[in-house]
Image (cartoon, rainbow, N blue to C red; front, side, top):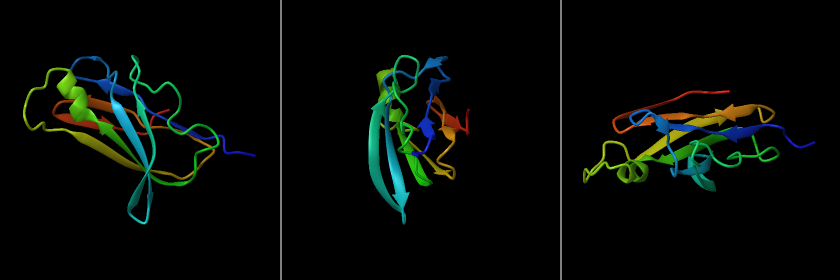
Length: 119
């Protein structure tokens, strides 16, 4: 029986008050502090990916890192500074139970972000 767990995200632009559409996301698996790229996706108009980042059957226990390409997204929204305060936003987290749904949302603005274990 394959694992039923899966991984999703939702990115909201809290400065603009809307979903962060067109934001590139990379998922890495962390093994002995080495990062291995697993998947790259782009958020849709709702700030979500069209399919789970890790679908059912591909969730393994372990450490992962989502890297949100916030800088490119913010530049696309008119941030013109040569050096942005936020560029790539890494979120490292553990999946302890491959049977569960893990939801890792990002609330993003040009000068801050937050994340949490969602549902």
